[in-house]
Length: 267
Length: 157
Image: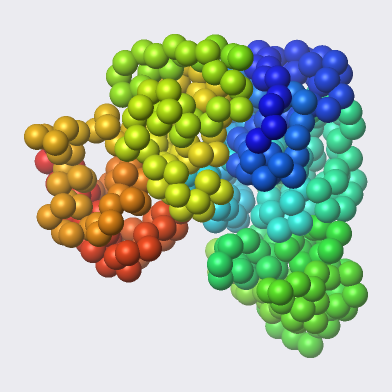
């Protein structure tokens, strides 16, 4: 790891000021991706702005018909939250399937979203549940937040403060993990709210998380696993690597979506 | 350099460290608590697991400075050679180790599992929960037995 200066702001405002003064700085949340990346020298920020002591960034509450989760809330806390378990059990289950227990005790929802790893789990939930990312500057709808692999709508000096998830009528997440890394080769989050069904896919797209128009169209008339029978997803734009070809991933998407819909209906 | 103060195994320590010092490095090289091991150094293997404020974390993927003000427990903090922690005793009784390299992390993770899931642990739960700890000797069978036995023994303490 290359040397950096370390800052531990007490507020988000201080964090934003520090980011303004240090153009090469990175925000440290749980560090479960950033630190390994720095150890491999794939990232060498001049400064780290640690949000660990910044006030008001963790916690889970219900606000109206939304579950609002603070950016520094650890995966383990989302997984074990009675509030999330009651309102959006699919989200609690997703958080409980990230990494391993020790990683879940450090990793945060805000960190995962700001990083936008193309195989991360949380982006699919945010996109399918049509969540809103609330930063120190503005509110960003999920459809505008994710802008390609490791790329988001966050601007310089912008820090995620919380994420607001509308409570769906039905939702589930299903992933097909790589047997070695346990990262999603294909992960599908389906969510039905009123007449709208959204299907978000992670792990498969070469441009990161995306909504599957094919699956959404098939589920529009009827939210049922059978609706996905015969649905074909195009391989263009999907990842092809030593783990799976783009055709294989394309085939997996409706298969995993079908399992997710069945899971959502079983609840 | 950055100043860091934390409680390690019940004792307060303060040090000036390079901010890039990992918690694992701090424990091993500054405090000479070499029971915490570094295996993979990429947060896969779990040999470096310690507790920070009562929760298991991978100390090779945590900065020491980020633990300022925290309470850290390492394998050295849970028992002594004459008075083993029940989980340590269970690993010995059940032959839950061969080379022993992964054992400190296994035991710290196992105690965390008991703290979260209670004293009656079935095999499936233990195997799922040990996802972040790798052993290259045992094939896990006796580790799983040891964790189940240790969990029950911890109920009596």
